[in-house]
Length: 215
Length: 215
DNA sequence: ATCTGTGAACTCGTTCACAGCT
DNA sequence: AGCTGTGAACGAGTTCACAGAT
Image 1 (spheres, protein in one colour):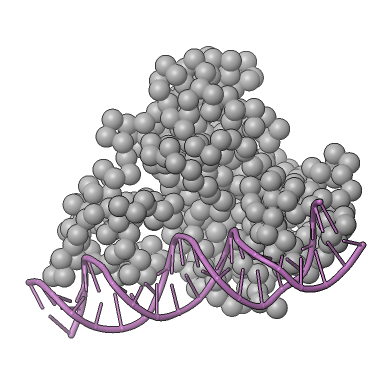
Image 2: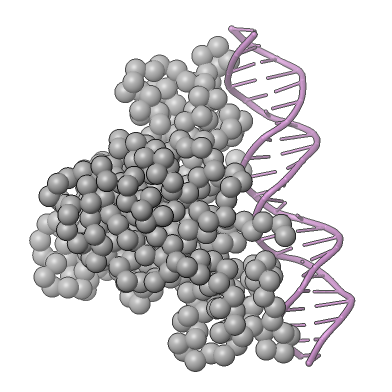
């Protein structure tokens, strides 16, 4: 199989959420064009994405909501769950912690780190906080594969190096810098500054129509 | 001219930050391959992006840091400055406020809104907070073109509608839903859940090499 | 009649590769 | 020799359009 792209994974995650909503609303089946309308995409796109994970619908009923949801979930999520650690308990770090606390059982932030002694050795939003110098030890102990970086720009590279050295394989980076790591580590940048500048730019121009996706 | 893409705008914003750093380090000029290494791109990419804004370097010295910085800034930023408003003063909203407070003079968050009466009519991180029912009035008064949505998923569409009705032209959306608006409004989604799921997915797979950008 | 699945066509962003400059 | 600017080639991702199913 031809290895699934970054963008497809992002859309699958979106479909998953949309399907949860449909399920709660009592829908049993859904057509590609309906999902497309909800996701702001084309129906062909939706069918391609679903094809990529090996699920099939039928012309008569489209896709079964329950089955499709199950297919996507088992494709995206690790059945045994994955441990995530977060570094940096400033405003943003705490916001992320609050946001994810108890949300996805298969993907939970199980430890957080900070330099500041007043922020550690306690539990914030259900997550245990440790001093950074215990990072390597705890990452290894928990076998965490994913790290979230919420530290200021100047500390981000150092933290990234430490995470990589401790065995992390993927990083979600909120610091406004590009991290330099070996390319066997997947890095996703969520750069708020750049995002805001893009919006500001297109808010000025833009009478024409444009679209965008996540990211 | 052929209208500059979303992605190019994002990279220009990144170059801008990198150039600030180079300038502070005392560099007077920079070659495309140096900028490319810092930005994780190719030199051809950097040259194309710079070409797009109409700046030119010389084979002898590459690009002049000061001039290039000035070119990018005057391209990305509105000379008169742009007003930004933020809606939703939960953990995330306050984090964003703190992050931008006094950072970019040409792009500052000048008003924030929340439903919760305990959060409004005061100043948080230098930003005045109002009850949401004053949103339309204040957006119009300040002529704000950009809105940031930090409210929970269920309220996001309503807030987006209100912002659009009040004259906002671009939205930075942190809520994990797709907003349905007329397509003369530019929407950039920063979806933390999707981003984390992508990282988790590729952290498991991925021994091969992949890359990514912002988003 | 209306859907899915999919080869083929297309789009648009990226990279190649080289002429021209110093 | 080493750089920039750029036409041309390339390629990943998207859409078209239709065969096949019901």
